[in-house]
Length: 181
Image (tube, rainbow, N blue to C red):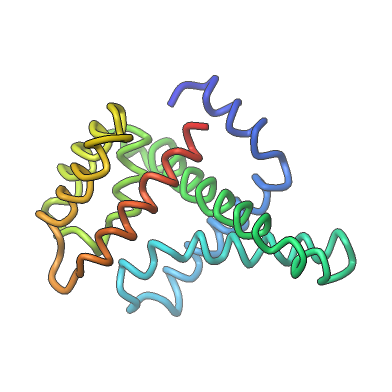
């Protein structure tokens, strides 16, 4: 991800969404380190999106001093909450790459690694993430979605259903689309 894309991302989402995303990323990491240590990794994949939606709803209620906007415009809250989750995931990946020094994967691959953890067998996560990132850089409108779904299904961890694969595929595509917007 170039510096221009990062600046465009910040301009697109706005400072409030970025601050909520930072809070979300910190909360998720705190949860991972404390009382959610034993939770399945595949459930942790959705935590930034859930927390982002929850925080954005609380933020909307706070700035309007009423719960009414949250109830009346719940689709917008959900959309912004998912955006917060996507940006929180991006912030976590940026932390992993720049602060911790993990430069073995691109930013897109790191986001995908975070999302597929627990769904794909541990020994295959990095290679599958590279293949998914490569598929996403091509045409995903036609054959790309099936390729991604097949990659996940072929390397799925034990107990992963077709429904899990379909939902994860949609989550990856939606997250990467929001990050590349």
